[in-house]
Length: 180
Image (cartoon, rainbow, N blue to C red):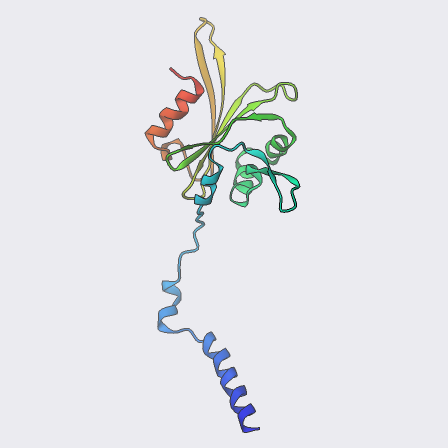
């Protein structure tokens, strides 16, 4: 009986001991709760299409979507809209393999003109560090004087801008879009 009482007392002290803050656990030293994201595991998508098929554990073919990944789904929906993401899943866009440029993934999409009448192409820039996303819709247009030009429409995650991208990436994006 004394042994049982001793175990009960020791267990209750252990429970209450975990609730008392020590000097090393003061709220002032708590880690910041700012949203951070480690997207380094997304590097494996380099060279893959945003939608591709893999064989499951029993040999069944499963379709995997880059756009449904938890690190991307919500930020993309906030930036480009749920309708866009639904359209991507339904095949409204044709895809190229995902490109890795430094610490950025570049996802290139082209409108499937059999399904939609929009001629804007899209590049989504996914930084592997942080939570921001960037996207640019672009289209080749001809001016009144016959001069060829590229019309762009940039979208960014809240609190970010084009200035957050390195110059080498901006140059790469201009090359992809066909800017002189």
